Amino acid sequence: MSAHDTPIPMVARRSGPLKGEAQIPGDKSISHRALILGALSVGETHVTGLLEGQDVLDTASAMRAFGATVTQLGQGEWTVQGVGVGGFAEPSQVIDCGNSGTGVRLIMGAMATTPISATFTGDASLNKRPMARITDPLALFGARAVGRQGGRLPMTLVGADEPVPVRYTLPMPSAQVKSAVLLAGLNAPGETVVIEPEATRDHTERMLRGFGAEVTVEETAEGRVITLKGQPELVGQRVAVPRDPSSAAFPVCAALLVPGSEITVPGVSRNPTRDGLYVTLLEMGADIVFENPRVEGGEPVADLRVRFSPGLQGVETPPERAASMIDEFPVLSVVAALAGGTTVMRGVKELRVKESDRIDAMARGLEACGVRIEEDEDTLIVHGMASVPGGATVESRLDHRIAMAFLVLGLVSERAVTVDDGGPIATSFPLFEPLMAGLGAAISRANG
Ligand code: S3P
Image (cartoon, rainbow, N blue to C red; front, side, top):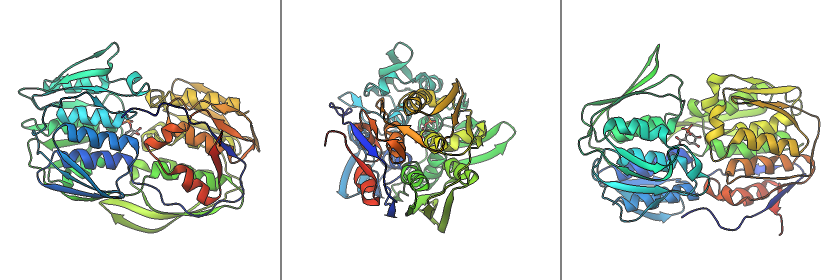
């Protein structure tokens, strides 16, 4: 299914203290991977805590189209009867991945070494995003792609008849590209090697091992060298999806900013490849305590206790940290707007090819709310102020994280902040509105 048709304007107003417990939904990255690896396994995969956001539901539909049986048993509880590595059937319909770059890129990787064809499309945001970053390495396996100009969706991928293994150095820090190559490598003979000069989220490597593949990771002068032994038999598993640190970021940052707040956020993933925002917030002086650290579903998790933190100070985030917080820069720039001094975010050019150009979307929206910013291709600088005027309507540009970031800003602005369309929030955080309302945040439909 593609994006919603009718925009849903939403408004956030200055709010009293946020209090209570925030039950964050399952991690989006891990949810996609659980369905895809379940589909590539023999036997049953049983998933709990699956994110039931539209992005993941679109991946579930796609896995059915490739021949897997995907069943919802209860809230967040799903099973997948897989078809095994190399067992994908040719879909009879176009695969619509909606808003999800992760969905389409991982699925294209997963089918690229099977001799079938499939045509992929998405919503207006996804159909603008670059796909050459995956079709280039998939071509090395022997797959062929025909898309629109500039390598855009809709696109047909013809899987390789006789795939060969690949050695590929990532030209940009992207877990989606790394994962597409590794998933393609599953049905190639021999060893597929991906080299990442900068570490990106490692859920694919972790989960591939969990499903029975041989994956080794070596830290070398070139970067992380990941080697996958091709044509393993993957076997269905039980997967407990941890809660999404990227979604947790919104109530966490709101609680840091709204005077008098104190919230707890149980069971959030603390995977070091996803932890950059939390490292940064602590450097800024945030009062966040990580309680009961433990391992759940193969991922380190903790319970977060977050308190209002007056006196946050601007910081500089180094380029090498960018990948570990790539989805959190929108909400960090909101925190930066209310911190003392200047926050400089370096090495962030990948933000330009997300669901929207997130540097431009944040810069224009913050300016409209009265915040001074500077930007170049790879940097975003936010000048903090004691109080943000707000009072603007901001474009969310089919981007869930832009919408949620500006709704957080509205909770602490002098005048309300309106987002022209909150509909995309359902792609990653369907219960954002009731969750925030439950904590005491004044977020509502603008016309309601
Ligand atoms: C994701 C990787 C990141 C991230 C996206 C999810 C993943 O994209 O922005 O939300 O699950 O692999 P890139 O790999 O393109 O940086």
